[in-house]
Amino acid sequence: MMFGNTQPESPDNKWRRQLDQFVKAHQQELAALSWGLWLENEDRKGTIGIALQPKPHFVYCPKDAIEKLNSSVENRLQEVLGIVEHYQPEVEVVMIGIGKDQIKLIHFEPQPAPPTCFEQIGKDVDTLLDILEQRLGEQIQA
Image 1 (spheres, rainbow, N blue to C red):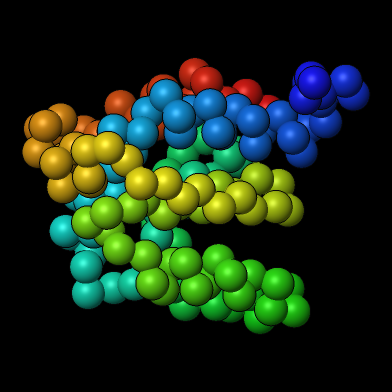
Image 2 (spheres, rainbow, N blue to C red; image 1 turned 135 degrees about the horizontal axis):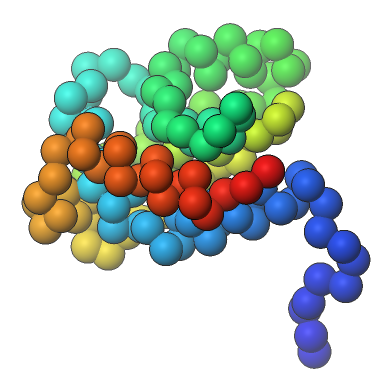
């Protein structure tokens, strides 16, 4: 049985597919970035966002901003809030993809774990951000 997509790809699905491909190709670096940012911000709850407009870039999404957004969309982001609140940064990665009028939850458990990825890659957060933003811009086109 084939599970191919027989319909033309919509812009809504295109950015999601491109983001999935980016995450899959860069799991180790994203895990290292996530751990490095957690080390810098551990006392402030929040997560990394990947904003696609005006060009793809990383942003910090504080938990209170996600809560405010949830409130404005009639609590349709409760599950996202629960995952952000309870994720374990030493084991998993949680990010939010932000497209035009839409979000996409990115959640995975890398192998090796984020602290090991950070150690093995051996780059600081700013360097990781620069590298990943460049690759993000190359891979994701509106």
